[in-house]
Length: 274
Image (tube, rainbow, N blue to C red; front, side):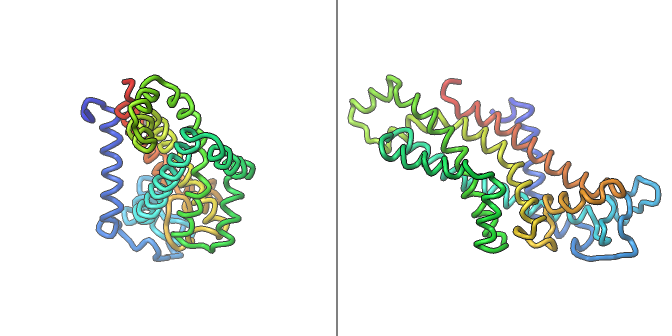
């Protein structure tokens, strides 16, 4: 089924390559990503004048090899992005199912909690939580998941409200099926396509959010290379060294496109109407 879709196949190949890059980063990186060489600072890529093959994608403001940092950044960026999407998607989907299917007080309480989260800007809420918990990899994954589940909950609840009124749900209730069985077997497959779409769109947002928190000193330490932190620090040198934000930015774009390609295919696969 995957091979019949060209875009999904391309997306899967890109994601497999990214996963392999993350796994074998020490073997693929030509230099230590944290090693500084001020004599070679802001060296351009090798195909530009004054560029050298020793630094294929150039160096940053501290003389660190950009290619090596992009390769090592694959590890942290994918770990943060995938972990947050899985945690936020699971939590939001469960709460959305409960709110939409059970209704009543459960729906009222959960939706008021969602309204509270939506009343604050996403990044501001993440800054508050990070200031309380402290900067670390585990904390930034937890905070971004806590602040990112509301989108799933609102969309899933809205779809469950319409799905639960359909005839086959009424028939399942009449046959004595338990509420948990109905939610997991009959309702969830009909709303899962929307979850896939939200997850594919959220991955890039999470990577940029990690960059913003890191840029403010509330995320991952700057010494650890991530695509987001490279993008945030490189924007100050865009006029002098365009390659600093360009290559991590391209890595983010490529990852998000691959996830979107595969997400569209998964949406069709998990949509019972198709």
